[in-house]
Image (cartoon, rainbow, N blue to C red; front, side):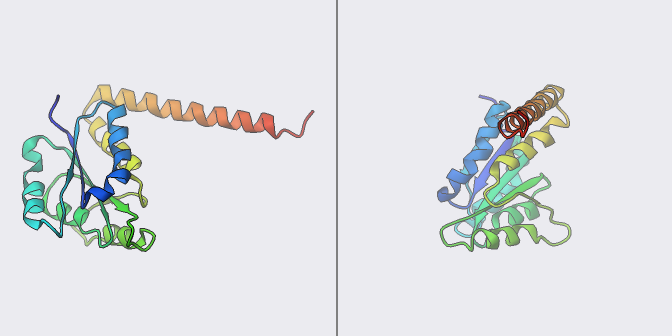
Length: 169
């Protein structure tokens, strides 16, 4: 197996059902990744080491999912030069994920975190693909084909609805 280019991290394994969307998207593009529990609150020393050393292991993008106070994406972004994509997770004790969203999106100047929708890990995976495709022509071509397939699917859905609800006839 190739060494991972993307690291999908989360504060708790209870976030994994949400974060699997990113993993599935990365698998579609054959991008090697790792999936780990790195808690900003329960294991801050591990988080510190992870964030500072990720680039030395070949990681190029970090996708960080967190619920509740959701400090993981911002704390990791403050410790690395790698792009960090935050996924607010709607957890059992969250306020419909709004607490997580606001915690991740309201980063201070100098600490950027690309923030997805609540539970939006598939788009986090797609953004990671787009970042990696900037320097990989094969991946870029695959991404273009994937987008063309989305366009075709939308056109087919449009045609089906037009036929089903046409007032002609």
